[in-house]
Image (tube, rainbow, N blue to C red; front, side):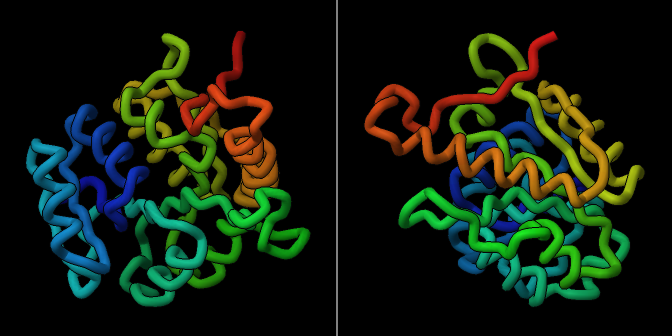
Length: 212
């Protein structure tokens, strides 16, 4: 049995995989290029297995560690294969040429568009507010990273929250999937700060934290 399938082999896939291994979860890495998936699985250690997109995602939780466009392509590719699974969208649908606008229409979100492609899955928005560097270490400023979680399925929210907590992170459930709109919009501002010459020390190493 595999607990978590991560689709992708980039920086976010590596960071989430690192937290999953730290949580003692069994991991499957899938990628369009199987060699990249195998390389990441070897880097993570533990017992990850790997393969290409011809493989069936084995995890109860399937994390699309991809940009928005590729995430939609993968969702379309797997389709009903993901029915009954918890599918996590981490993407931010941002115009990366300008970092000044979203590429989804008002009144929707990347997560909601992906959910429309996967009607049989429990789609969750999570990890879109965490950059890869701090996420890999599990903390920012000496405190656990906050992970905001949105889904129309309470069961799926709880499932991702349990994983995040086991991974040394602090889960914050924010309600239904429509709240992905606020999470994605907020990250538009945060990501714009990373590339602003006014804040040269940020450099994709910042983390969000709700203090109490």
